[in-house]
Image (cartoon, rainbow, N blue to C red; front, side, top):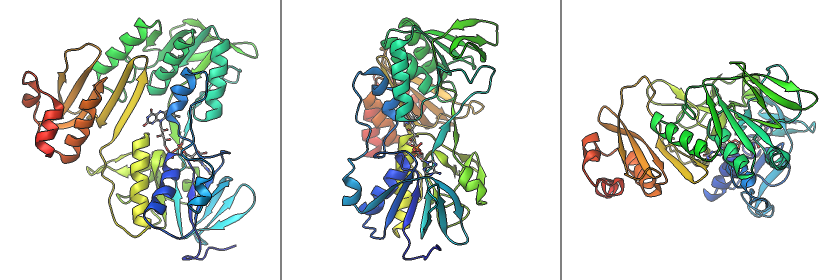
Length: 413
Ligand code: FAD
């Protein structure tokens, strides 16, 4: 089979956050040509954030599906439970695991990321989990219910969310983080300290500056051996050591790939009939660099831009990034990107309450990012301010009784 541009569908590889939304937004744009959404996971496409939160905390399963199964035929979106194994750019078609081929007029890569595994000695033992899919989450929840001692390798967002859920399920929990502070790749030292203290106050043991060197036991893992020689008892281990973008298809068909599939501001890859969006896409930052983000906001906003372009409306991707995590009683929301640690920054902390505060980050007197702990009003205001690029200065934020929401109201009308 060969592709026939104009008749063939828009094919979307991956029905995660980015893939589902590009199909939805294409229809919202009034796009009438066929759309095929291909994903190896069975069932209706699902969101992932609840997998490390409600799914592990509760005893009943939260709703994960973006939409009920009848949504897809109703919007004339073909959902294909298959795997794309190869892209033939010359003939404009994709090969599927089932042996079929599918022509495309436009191809959208929304292949996301894979959870990073470890190869340290003993990593083949059972009881060692990663968390990316609903089945992973179900397996972890069942394992936590039977476990006494749990070791979480990696003190990032997902690792700490799992640690909080494991405490909630009455496990003895140790978090092992290689950096000197938890979540330090994405949050400031101040916020990191706050969450470290919160975990310890809730009974989680947090070990920083050390790494997992081996897993000991029999068929099952029984102990985790750390680089400083410490041995930790473990009935269950959860790896939260990061993810890698799923770029295999793109690389094999010769698209430009670095830390992700390289795209321009319109999310086109080095082949203009192929777009890449979401966790797998590396986009230009405007200062000559590139960045790849792992968040539902990024996936949704990039899906919106790609859908508009495919439907014939041109917009560029320049959304303000935002992220969140929930651990115990604390909800952290981040608007904007924290400046690189080598960049000279000024920070201002607002909010007197120990459990509810925001940290404002400025570079050259310009607001770059705001971290809000249990201050959702600040977060909303920060997103408005950052979108407008208003002239808020550090000294403005130091004025007694300063409120971000007032500043946003004044500066953004
Ligand atoms: P994904 O959602 O990973 O979807 C990619 C899809 O592509 C997958 O379904 C995969 O099966 C499919 N696929 C890959 N290759 C092929 C192929 N060759 N053929 C067919 N199908 C293929 N983000 C937040 O902003 N806030 C949170 O609180 C948050 N919590 C999270 C908690 C967990 C446990 C996880 C795992 C992620 C969390 N994230 C969170 C991140 C967020 O879920 C991702 O950024 C988002 O899902 C990215 O969407 P995506 O479509 O790019 O990738």
